[in-house]
Image 1 (cartoon, rainbow, N blue to C red):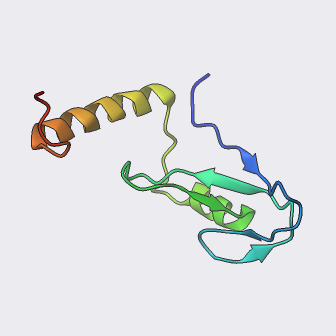
Image 2: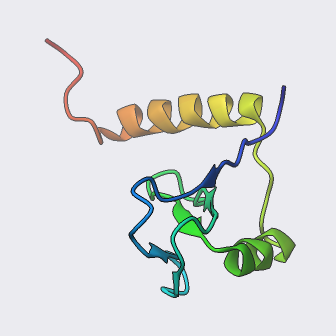
Length: 92
């Protein structure tokens, strides 16, 4: 199977308000949130409400990442970081 998997997350305790990490609105317990990755690999994604998720899906600069492309990008990013010395010395 190719393509990014996006899960519907809900609260587990049934009492806490659900908060969208983009618009910061609170929703009733059990409201589904959608996880969306950031295009910059160094930044974490966000849990979005349905409205914010739909907004980002419709944006022209939103891309769909495939598993194979993601693996290749990770390898290239690590190799580039090692060349630039981001991880420090690789010698023991």
